[in-house]
Image 1 (tube, helix red, strand yellow):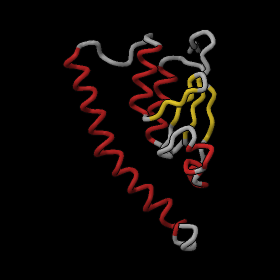
Image 2 (cartoon, one colour):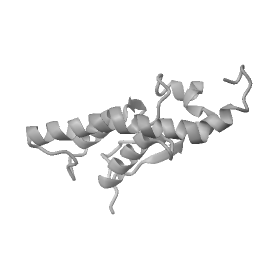
Image 3 (cartoon, rainbow, N blue to C red):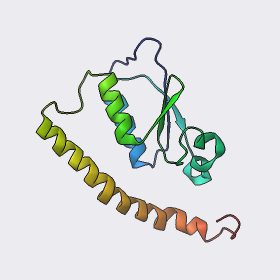
Image 4 (cartoon, helix red, strand yellow):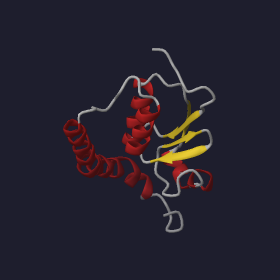
Length: 138
């Protein structure tokens, strides 16, 4: 796969490997063959709530994509930006009805599927760790 970026364009992805939203953006970047610098945000250390990350994304949610020093947030919006900025190969349909259907599926995944995954991740990963924390740490 060849990698391309707009001349002078710098892409830095702040992401977490276990994050489904981060995975969506990584897939888009790779499908488009875009060169980017990847920075891991350690969710186990709650780096997404650290001051340095909250400057990128005040909501503390991964991923965030820095484009020439400007932070972009929300995975669906990041992917739309990438598809509009780097149109080849196109990742969205041009037909308005198909685009509607694509967005409907994206909403279903975000509103239904991802919350189920997040609940599972909390119960099997973070909840056991949280039992060991003091009230101050919680």
